Image 1: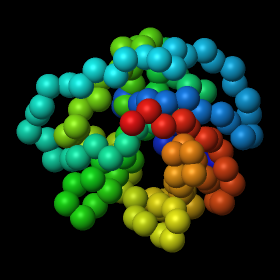
Image 2 (image 1 turned 90 degrees about the horizontal axis):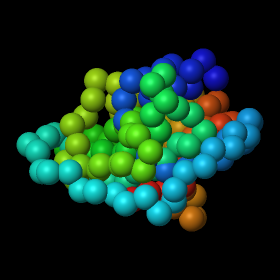
Image 3 (image 1 turned 120 degrees about the horizontal axis):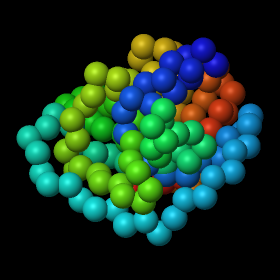
Image 4 (image 1 turned 135 degrees about the vertical axis):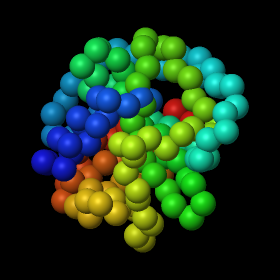
Length: 145
């Protein structure tokens, strides 16, 4: 759980999307699931957006919503947090890869953090993002994109 505490701290500094159910701790938060996703203007960035998921169970220090986006750059894949307010979420097709991003690698049916091998991520059959710490499911985030 220490590794996820670090990720949560990083998440609070960055931006993120989609609704999650915590397996270890249930938190009730209401989010407008029909929130409009506005495309951001194209930028010359180093990543290509693969998917995004909202984590409604946690908020930033400023009370912002948190989401995760998976971004590819060349042969590398990263997961990073983004923040937004209310239902005002803007996704970029070519987002910058932030310094807080975690490189992940495919390992069977899941992705594993390169820096922290105890952390893994899996997309379930409904398209939700599952977050694991030492093989224990700690969050399930519903897919936004």
